[in-house]
Length: 315
View 1 (tube, rainbow, N blue to C red):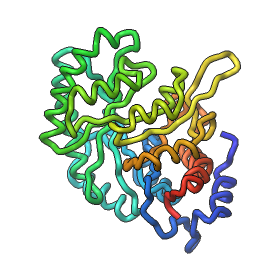
View 2: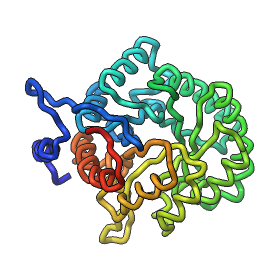
View 3: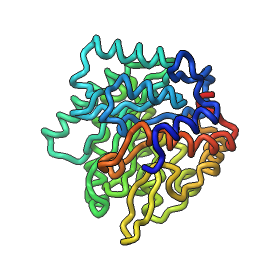
View 4: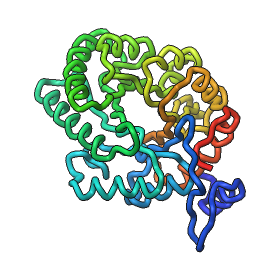
């Protein structure tokens, strides 16, 4: 990262995002966003959970996505009742919304792993209710595993397994949002739509992440409008091509995605979900990665796009 924390904070302060009171930074008055602008704590594993929440609130994000996979701070199998209550209170005190929980599970797996995944889904859907803020519980977002060349072989077994997931989701009253991944069996827009519509349930929907379609050479508007009717949650990040020809995920705003147009398409389509920054493991695994600077940098780069689209995150 080239931006120091001090310079990032100075820029944020100059932009009027921070209100400094008693020497500490606090987000100014919060107004509800037409499209909530969130940050995924998938990119903040190294920070204590309470500090990560405070950082996101102080920068100006309207909400967070919590990472609930095994070994992560919000692992639904580990958080006890007191920790859940404290976490919910922290988010409420910071006026942070909770649009989504991340729980990455594979879909086409042996029977014993499938049973384990169903138990994980029961745990995370209960966590969604325990942490609910506002009128609606968070959705549960997941990729599905496999490889692109396995789609034709796996699509029917995946559909059968997803029907079992749907029963868990329906009983809990929690939406599961499945996400296409460039390296997964489910990787194309049309196949996401096909799978969601085959299940035909209000509890199985799509999460959209253009970076995975950009890798496949697909245009933003066409892929977005194809998946959007089934979409309840959006991740954003970018791609860059390195000098050796390798393509890597990077922070949103560091690539070629036109976020002003992106947000305009969403408003025109009356999209009702959140837009959430996802920092790829290709970014946060680098030795010089700083989660606070990354979150600040994304907010600074994207705030203008939100304004141009006639939206606000936190002001």
